[in-house]
Image (cartoon, rainbow, N blue to C red; front, side, top):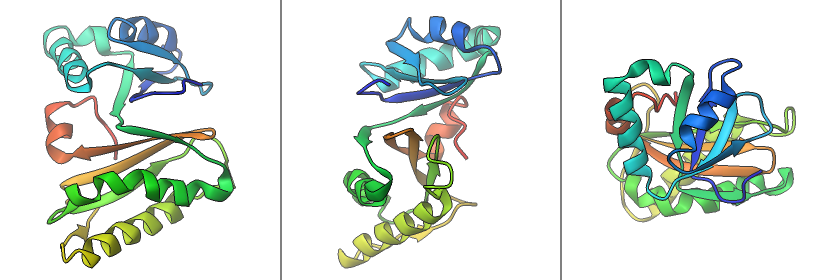
Length: 179
């Protein structure tokens, strides 16, 4: 697995090779070890997203094999026993950006089936973030249905990527399909 990655992409069924060729024009992308899941590193995420959006508008057929793009800001390695503590540490730099917003945490787990619960981790991290903001006297609300911002944690075996995605980003870049 790649040590440093700031993009997780998915390919449509049996389209991984095509998507890898496409994405490698913009950075370094590799198979993750999970079917149709690709990890990559690009030097400038906004420029990368703009390039894909330009293709989507001008030649959408070129992207039909691409499922989704998830931009990430930080990575961490973990063991099952320390996942939640490391996840809290990894989301901490984004907490102040959630002030006065409706947000939620989403954990997408690949690997550790039966060992890690994405839903339990999401609830714990939602609480951790709210508590951290409350200690600073800053309001925020957990709201999945009408969110303004989301923290995404994508795990691939013992590696994880963390990103902050806004509602505006999802509207501007439809390839960001995190739910």
